[in-house]
Amino acid sequence: MDTTLFTFIIFLYFSLVSSDNHRNLPPIYEMEDYLGCFERNDFYCKVDARLTNNGYENNSLWKLINDSISDRNSYDRTIIHRAICLPKREVNLNSTKKLSEFRINEKFTGNNLTVLVEDIVCNTKDNLNISLYDQLLLFFFIAYLLLIIYATMYDRWKRTSTAGSTKNKAIIALSLSSNWRKMCNTDGNEDYIKLKSIQGIRFYNMLLIISVHTLLSFNIVYISNPNDLEILFNNSIMRNYTTMSVFFVQTFFLISSWIVTFQIYNIYRSHGKFTISQALILIFNRFIRIGVCSTAMLLFLKSTWNNLARGPINFDAIDMVQRACKLNWWQSFFLINNYLYLGEICHPPSWYLSVDFQLYIMTTITIYLILKFKLNEFKIISFLIFFSCLLYGSIIYMKEMDTIYRINHNVTRMFLFVRSESCRILYLSTYSNWTTSLVGILLGIAYTKSKNNNIVSNKNRKIISILWFLIFFGLPCAVIFLARHEFTGIRAAILGALVKPLFSLGIGIGILGMSHKMGGLIKHICENKCVVLMSNFSFCTYVFQFYVIFSKGIESYSLMQFELINLIKYYLLFDAPLAIIFGIICTLVFEQPGINLQKIFLPQIARRKEQRKRE
Figure (tube, rainbow, N blue to C red):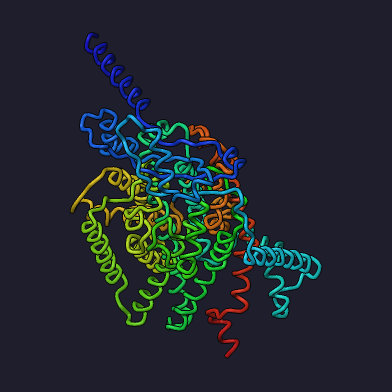
């Protein structure tokens, strides 16, 4: 009893000391009056600064601040963020950096601390300068919407069949009602039916990615209670979730490579060959399919119309994106932007589109060479998996990186997040995701060779079902358990190279088993008709979610209050539903019309029966 009481007293003492220490530390975020600043026609600036010691070794406040650097469970208190109002007359005479340093240092007088400004972004009242580009964009967008309305009415009146003229086909391609009927059709060919579980997994995975972006959206804004966010990230459940979140996108890479693999094998079986021209047709059509929605998003983000959504919380993010769109638009257009830092990418989520397209090219080339020279598929893919693991592991070792890119309250502060070297290497790069793509190829080949065989007999069904379940759920869980621990050196290199393909292998085995009628309730959940229907809108939901999720704080003129319950409410009532609705609209307006027009005007690989008719 005495021991318990003593332990409780000690725990209470250190808790109170920790609480006092937080109160003594300089606030991480502070904001001055935004509306009052604009009424005076002054500059409102967001400043990212770093605290340094003036050389006094016995500075107790600096010791507390310095201790936070090595404490991974707390914010790095050497970095502070301020939103301040700078008088316009003084800004004209001095640089904003020097003036903001002077203003912030005034508040640290007597603490023996110095503030060094590392980044500053300013906003003024008169920031909506409509250019010719903005006017043309608005004109063509309205004209395009009117054309879609006309096409929808034309489709309703004429009910023209697809066997009509090219002109009629092109008009119907834009019809909202025609495209809605296509999107609602959940029937398909033999492969689509067997792999219908893929559609459900895509949709559920999209919901998980939205949840991660919801969490990130709170990390990049100014909040009044960062200590509560710090406590949340130190929760064991949150640690597992943030570790798992790094792997969500791997499922998309796995599925993409799987699908293109069996598509190419189907072409090979149908035509008796797979040629370079067929490979180029696939790649070109893939580029256009991704490019239609991606380009639409780029055009909108580059526009000054986005300044209508400027507020004290988000104007620096809008400025960063528009600057990136001005300088680096072509990397996003040609789908090669994943080698930039996130802050340099016009439409930051489009890094995934770049990696996906690059892996698509690599997959197509790999399978072409296998079929061309009749190589042993499993030996070649196994060798490439070994080589990609060796390559990625070597990069982790040489760059002295961790096993994975870790999401926590420190690295996701926008000032650090958009400039993160570890994010660029461990998460955005093509080579860090190549092994997952190769696992997708391997499983795609395995599916192609076994889809018409009954690999599960009545005798061994129970044993195989148990093994399937253990791999489907056990392997990803084991990977998350390993990945949540930090490693360095050779151990980080080995585990870093293996965790992504092992996670993907578990998901892939789950899909392969469901294609052979395994899974029971899990299969029904993944193949639910409504879920399969919603998966048809997953691509546009991902591309256009940026506008929905990262619009928080537009009408907020003070520090935002973070609470876990608010985070959940935002996700369930705002972010997820609106992102899906936005995805549905953009699918009908941009993606599906683009696919329809592709099939009409761009070269396609004809089916064997169609080719014989032409011959």
